[in-house]
Image (cartoon, rainbow, N blue to C red):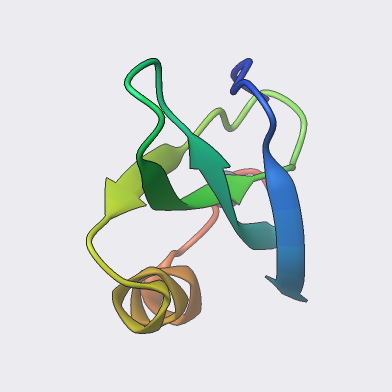
Amino acid sequence: MPARINFRSLLKIGPVQIGNYRDRKGRTKDAAVCTADSCGWSADYSSSTAAQLAARSHRCHVS
Ligand SMILES: [Zn+2]
């Protein structure tokens, strides 16, 4: 799982955690992070809705 400062998990869809964090400029960003070992997929989104959509469509190649 990539290090994200102040990452706060809001919900989990499958192996993917949805949450938000603050970037270095203090802005809140939404992110989806796959927690499966050796997957490492993560992405930032402009809204939590977009992050949830991405989490549902994520096909984890690990499991
Ligand atoms: Zn994955």
